Every structure is written in C-alpha cells, then in structure tokens.
Image 1 (cartoon, helix red, strand yellow):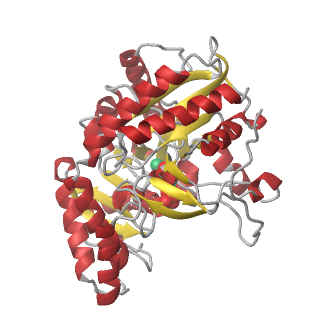
Image 2 (cartoon, rainbow, N blue to C red):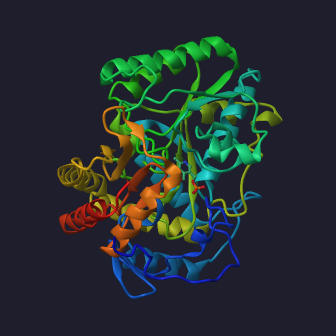
Length: 453
Ligand code: PLP
C-alpha cells in the first residue's frame, strides 16, 4: 500500500483541535491550509486541492471572492465595530435583518436575532422558544424533542438536544426535559422499513406518541435539521416534514428548523424547509449566511413568536439574550455581499444540479466496492456510508481508522473529504463545477481501490 501520510505537518502544539483527543499522536499531524481560491485550497506544501468540504459546510460562494473581501474592507474603513445593545444599531445590521426577513418571506419569518455561529443560533432558538411559552402564560412548556442522529452544536442547549451521546457524556448533566426520538432514515431504522412514505408516517407517529407521552402541555418545541448533516447526511422522506408540521400544529408545539447547514442553498433550495414545502416557527442560520468569511449566526422567528414577545406586557417579554458580537458590522457586510452572490449566481440551483451529478458519478464509481453501503445526499450534502457487511448494513468499526485512511489517500490524489466515523462526508463549495465533480470522484475511487477496510 502506498503511503497515506498527509502532505504537510507541523508540530505546533499550543491549541487543541475541536472534536479530537489532544493526547492522540494522530491529532498532531496538521494539514495546514494556507490559501483558498474558488473551489480549491492550497496546502503549506503547495498543493492545490478540491475543497470537498467547503471549509466546514460553509464556504458556499467559494474562497477568495473579491466582492465579499471588498465589502469587508469597506466596512472596516467605515466602522469596524459597534454594539447593538443599549438601543444602538448601525446600517449593516438593519440591512441584513431586512434582507433575511425578505428572503424568508415565504417561510413567514418576521424578526432576526444575531450571534456569532451555529451553536449560538441554536441556543437563541431554544431560549426564545421557552420565552415564548412564558410570554403566552404556559411556562410549564419547557421540553424539547429532537432526533437521535441530529446535531445542533456544542452549547449546553444544543448539546442537550444533540442525538449522538459522544457530544454529551463528558459534559453531563445536560438540560432537563430533552427527549430524543428516531430519525427518518431509510437505510437504517428500527422498523427495518424500506418504504419512504411509510417511514415518514412511522416517524411522525412516533413524534406524536412522544408528545402525548410527555404531555402536550409540557412540550415547548421539536427541533431538527431539514436534512441532517453531521449525523451522516440523512435525507428524510418527502412526506416527513409536512407530517411533522401537522403533528406540531395539532399540539401547539413550536417547530424549530436548524438550518445552520441547509440555509442559503446547500440542500438544493434556498432553505432546507423550502425544499420540503414547510414553514417552521424558528429558523437557525450560520455557516452559509456569509460563507464563513467572518463568524456570524442568525435566528429568525415568525409572527406567532414575534407578536407574542413584543405584545407581552410584563418583563417576561424582554429579550435578555444577546452577544457582544450580535450583528457585528463586518460579519453583516460579508453576509450582504455573500447573499448577493448566492442569489445572482443561483447557487441553490447549482447545488441541486452538481449535487445530483456528484451523487450519480460517485455511485457509478464506488457502489461496487464491498465497503460502500450507500451513497446518499441532497444538493451538495453527500455521505458515503461505510459498511462491514453490505447485506446486513452493519457499519464498519469506526475505531479502525478506515475512513481516515480513505480521506488521506483522497487528499494525496487532490481532494479534501471528511472522514466522520463510519462515513465519508462531502459538502463542497456551492460554486462547484463538473471539473471538480470529476476530480472528487476520481480521487475517491483511487482511495477505495488502494485502502482495504
Ligand atoms: N447546527 C447544525 C445543524 C450544525 O451542523 C452545526 C455545526 O456543524 C451547528 C448547529 C453548530 O454550529 P457552530 O459550529 O457554528 O457553532
């Protein structure tokens, strides 16, 4: 077997990588990325690689976009920072809030709250959901229901509703009243259900059963990603979100769409919920909101919530939540420039077209390998599910390093993909072209030919 050593390493040890064991020697082999341009990034060794991970699901408009850099520079010259507490504001935060409310008009969003990233946006959503119920006099509604494969960031709220226990166990106890139910996952589900429509009904029924079991008047909200990302790119059946909306409406439960990954085109429509023809009560955004050029998160609420909170006559209506960097002017300027590109270049459509092409080409190139169980995705969110047994769909042993070795060879062959336990995940820039689709496919094919499970 050829070497799978990364091309560039450094021994600097004065920070810890997120989601890694700092005592693991493997975590000291940093792949230093020193430059980005379009759909590519360059390593310290000088190699240009296809950015198959889009930074981290977020560089939607591609690297090194002049329009975004110009907007950032202009904003720095005008006003680098001022707060939006104490009745203050600045032009960019008004412009971005107006822009977001306008863009989400079909979803009925009316107000925006800003923060610095996805975990913040989720934390804001969970707190506002509880505040809403207090504002309308139902303070006993405090519970959150979420999905077992869901990922909602790392703050205590988000980690409490995260599905995978790896994000919780070292930090417990978590928030009380967080309940996890089954994910609408066709490839692996507890019913062994192979029919998408039936699975959609089974999962929506489980949500209803859980709401009834908990007591509808105790449940604040159901939170989920329109397409689950970090949990392994799980695309729900088409009837799932409409059924979930119906169940939430039946019991008055708020529906929170965590669009941190799906927002602004990644799943092939401008918003994930739009792809399912559904409106949520709260939408959480980050990542693609400004393509990662400057940290930014946003949480939008609909009329039901904004009117209840604005109309609340007591202090309960005061939004005692916000961050020093809420509405950071430079981050807002980057968002305005990035969103302009997303719309002008119709990147949601490009994500849909290139995503379908990439999925088809990957299936053609990889499905015959014994370790490839399934290739699934929507838009430019794609996962290769690695199995020990194709028949039983038993996943590979996540501790044997197979996904990491595959990713290392893929990198040697010119493309970055993300090994996540038993999956390889692809979330490239939304400006992807067929040239990069082919490079990603070829690099992965060579990796599967070379690395044995
Ligand atoms: N929500 C979802 C759906 C995510 O995928 C992520 C991050 O990947 C987050 C929340 C947390 O975002 P951040 O890492 O910016 O805090």
